[in-house]
Length: 324
Ligand code: UDP
Image 1 (cartoon, rainbow, N blue to C red):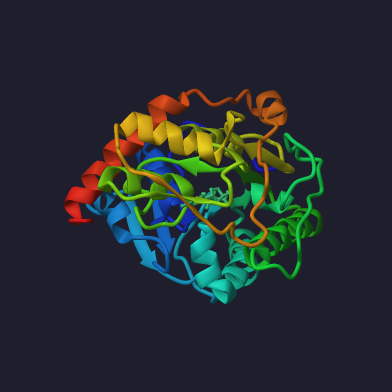
Image 2: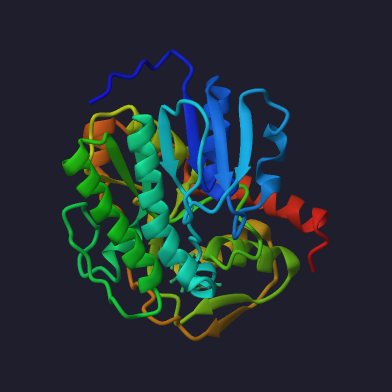
């Protein structure tokens, strides 16, 4: 494994940098004095998430679809693969692109990592566990995924990319890391992203009914984005190459989340019920014992605090974009 100094500035390529998590990672590395090469095809990412960084001498942006071969000039210490549609409505809208970015895109980045002798970190997902039959989910759980269901375009792309990363690690001794990201929320999610927190928050703030899919008894566990990116940074400097769950084990039903957001906003919005999307997982909760053991990481931001920051953001977005 390559020895890497924590103090010397690095060059970090972030694929998917204009997305929700990619843009927060870009901020983190720029704050630490590193150089960021941001790459995005802007399919679901938004350049406005990076606008505050464009004048920074350590920041550059390259519009590229990583699914197609592309070149990067100069040395690269780290490659972070955060490029993919990630909201279920997004990957259902772009099924082929999602499969391509997870397979061809990951392969292109792995080849770039070989060429540049970079350390490679991949954003995997709790979706590799599918509709899990065990809870909480440990990394050793192999998952319960339909290979032909509608969500398979995302789930199987991410499972394939994990397999390919392990093949590069074993064949070429590439220094690779993988994070399995559980539901994450915070500033810079798109109000119309379709995920549950942006949906409920914008609905509550605009006085529209909150749309619960199914009966709302399915569970999720929500991690604030600052906690997630600090865990990713720690993983990057670790020697651990197998997948690590990062998430907040604070599990709750979708119904309880809706009630919490209604209370928090003081909104008089009603709750309406919509059909449960196909293959929607019934439960999801990370077991973070491995992250605690190998990274000394656990989330710090309580849900109420993180929801407060996120609500402030959606309030600003609603005003800025005159949403109604
Ligand atoms: N959900 C909901 N109403 C919405 C959006 C989502 O009830 O307006 C539910 C969805 O069916 C799922 C959970 O909230 O059970 C989390 O959905 P999300 O799309 O945020 O992420 P997922 O964990 O499914 O990838």
